[in-house]
Structure formats: C-alpha cells, structure tokens
Image 1 (tube, one colour):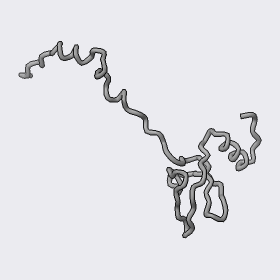
Image 2 (cartoon, rainbow, N blue to C red):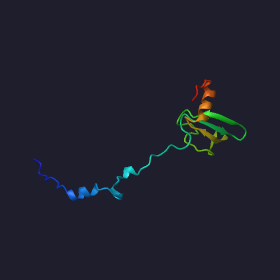
Image 3 (cartoon, rainbow, N blue to C red):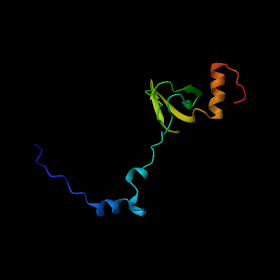
Length: 109
C-alpha cells in the first residue's frame, strides 16, 4: 500500500528551535501593521485653488483627494486644487464640521 518510510523525528533540532533567545522569535512578531496614510473615505478635507477655500467630504474611495497627503495637488476640470487640511474621523475638528454639515446639535462629545 504505502511504501514510504516514516520521516525520522530529529529531537535535537526541534528542541533547539524553541529555546528562548534573541533569534527564537518568528518573523511575523517583528512585522508592523501598515497604517493608512492621507485622507481616507469619510474624512473632511479643506482644499484651495488659491482664491477660495472649500471644505468637502471624501465620500468614495475613488474621490480625487482620497489617499492624498497635505500639500498635494489635483487638477479637476482644469483647476488646480491643493489639499490644505485633513480632518480625520473622531477628531474635534471633524465633529465640529460634521455638526455644521448635518445641522445637528451635539451632546457633549
């Protein structure tokens, strides 16, 4: 039926790999989670064309300013817009703009 011999168990090699020490950590313990950078979906941003400032919300991941950093430029319909400020969700500035945008009263948060 099965003519393969069982693989010999090498005890000394196995014990050595689990000893505490500098090199005993597995590689995934040293990896860092990649943080999201730039403006994300749901954030409010302040953009400027040099003449006026506009506050807008990134409602889709395909928004022209999605994942852009402060200072980056995007051309929309021949007009150059610069990203001035990002208000991430959960910050006080975001909540203030959100309340004004939705005309809601806030209750002490």
